[in-house]
Image (cartoon, rainbow, N blue to C red; front, top):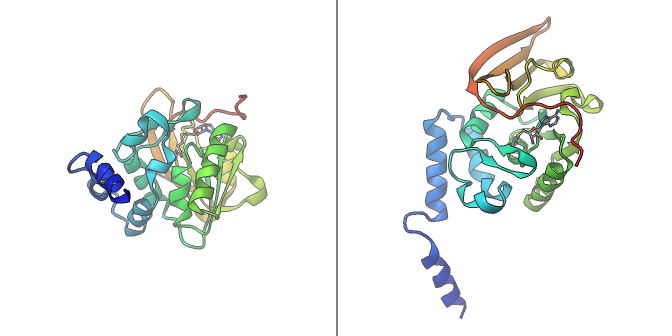
Length: 228
Ligand code: SAH
């Protein structure tokens, strides 16, 4: 009986598209788009993107494209997640703040690379859904909050690393202030309907260093907590 069931499931799998092959293609796409950091690739191999995409689009989770999630938001393209994570260069003892929890996928990747991850979204529903996935995966070093992330998280500041996954016109002042000296913030800046730039900000002893990394396209950073 059991054997029959397994055979039937195996037979339903399209040829050349086993989970292992899908994963290999996923990792190959990341590498070919410039994600080369071994720690980042290991984290992305371990964290199953399929767990963060629901409904209609679930079977496209292993393609290198952004996908719709609840509340009219998007889970970022995996190669962009990889490149941003690589640029952030989080270290094992770091405390990281992420603005824009969305599906929770980016926070889950960060949880593999840093000691502690705080993540904030303005949509309570997204935070709740992401928390469910973190719990199911046993990712106990992530704390998710529903709040306006443009104010940062003063109670837990300063941070070694800050990653923003929604675009502001300029780096929000509170986030700059909550970055440790020597810390790094990666964020998209620019108008929401135009091409934005991914920026890497390093806090120096005096002032900040800005480096422009690449063009990107993110949903806008919107002030205030969403009314649902
Ligand atoms: N990092 C996510 C993708 C983020 S999409 C992932 O891995 O899936 C951008 C998210 O930023 C959206 O969920 C949106 O609700 C959130 N957002 C926009 N403005 C915000 C703000 N001021 N504070 C917190 N979250 C915000």
